[in-house]
Image (cartoon, rainbow, N blue to C red; front, side, top):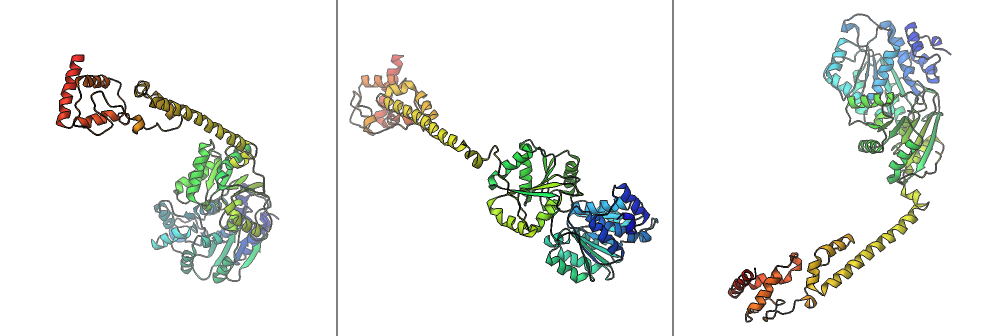
Length: 526
């Protein structure tokens, strides 16, 4: 079968041929004739099988007779509305419309949040036949009266299940109330849940189900594998896989936005060019990151679910689930970024013990078991390196280290004990012994003020181990001896109990007399 056999207008056939396509895919071969017959369609196909073209081509073909070359906005009312859950998917659909409709005088516009609304208002007021939008920003234009939906003939919900998951149903119901009752409705997605089928029954007229493969199944060109690894070892394993396998282009998924940013920074510190994309980044930043990834300027793109829908990357070889998604259907969308357009791909999942239930749900949906691969040895993986002797080396190193510290501490204790016997010897050695103790990993020994370390009474009868004896009057010889000792190297406050007691002794009048005699003795000695 060729595209010419699908009864498409010559302008579309020319654009398709220039894009390099000669034969329609299975979903295109079944959906295009049904849409041209103006039937309501529910199309379910594997991601990467040409699902977008399966509704853009017949939509353009149906609108071709209504195309006008007039510059008047009134001649270009909105006739087709395409709703998507994400900005990236909206941009992809609008690009497809422009690519295939470049030889038709039809106007198209894409509207989504995260960017200035003024250029979008200007484009809509100029008149467009096709609008590709996210629900929230479309309602902003409706409230601003910059768009009129009263002449819409074709409504397309792309990735309808994702819009339901993201809580867009209230917005979608509001939009449905603004559309004419007589219209054609199309739903396209890689997955269809029972909730989506119930939703379709509410506003579609006898929809025709088109399934080119078993529902909720990924491409057969994708190879699945999983590593069971602790969460703390995921980053090291990821870096090892990228480096050892020389992955030149890899898309990595996380569940949370903060995890995407942190992982991108960690990989950058590992010497791997990486960038992150998620809903907290501005549309300009998201577009720039995606363009750099497509062009090969960065080989690693870390993304959340925002990138699971609508990313069309030619021949993406690897998709890695750094964290498994909460719902099995999101796994299908994630890995749908690889194995597209006949090119093989590989989906790798890093599964921690708390994610085993998620993995079981994914295997139940796929109706097959995902092969487990043995975790390779890599730097930073303590669990697997220990099984090959690293733990033994580590355990033997620890006692040696402790033994070394014990020997140093023992030597320090011996030095301390030796210093207790002679106060002057401790003073002469100064801080060297304490520095030795500190290097040994122990605190410096605090001086002992007990009876064993107390100074002997001086010759004048004054006992410095007691607070103060007012009845004892030191003679001149004792004062001279005291003055001589005062010239010795100064110690810390904790090592000078006699000095502290002496300051207390000179507090009284008798002490003042002693101080005067001491000063006189020092002067005469000098």
